[in-house]
Image (cartoon, rainbow, N blue to C red; front, side, top):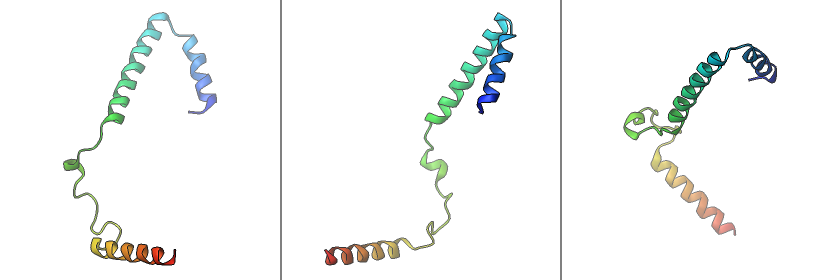
Length: 79
């Protein structure tokens, strides 16, 4: 949020009554709890499995293993 928008909200908050401020605080607290809960939840494997297309990197897994091993062997032989 831009600083200008935040300052405008603060100005508007000053005009609220005490009970309205308490209601707003309760609302904001609940929103923060919901967002924190969502952020802390990790996706479960069974929920995301099968979502990625095969092959994910457009390269077969065995081809990737063979290529990276060959590259590593080449790097080691140079040193």
